[in-house]
Image 1 (cartoon, rainbow, N blue to C red):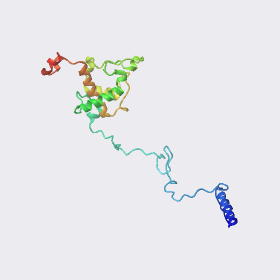
Image 2 (image 1 turned 60 degrees about the vertical axis):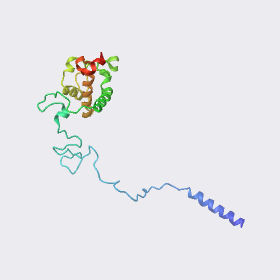
Image 3 (image 1 turned 45 degrees about the vertical axis):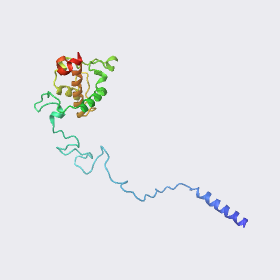
Image 4 (image 1 turned 30 degrees about the vertical axis):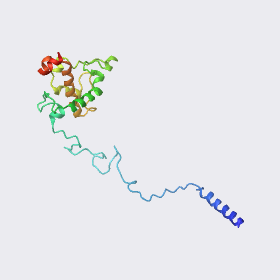
Length: 202
């Protein structure tokens, strides 16, 4: 009985060892049970086409096509200008504390490196040698229409770069609203306060 058991153990061991040996790798392609669309005919970008007349695989959009999210019917909102090309006087949004808070955060990210958090134009890059921008509190900018500030954010001016690619339209208007609040905070006159608060201020 013991002898039979030994023989069985040797046979099982031999089978186990031989099962680990796969032999020479096969040169045949592996079996692909579900190829799906792995081998589909397709055009590569910038490739040449035998189908289209212009021989180009990449097709131009149909005239009048507008990408999703790019329909800009409200010209004033997206440009800050009227149809006649004049800068609008006031922001075309209802200003709330939520908008001002959003504008403050975006301003501190994108604007304060040059304009600093007070708008005086002494940001960190100015201290490193960058040409200082004008203070946001000078009369010219305080009296400028809101559309001007929006246009400058969008398209840049002099040393200020274009920010329309980094800052969405909504956030640009939020920043404009915050800049107005910032200007008001630094240039408040006594007559701007309600009469019931004047005693507390004095």
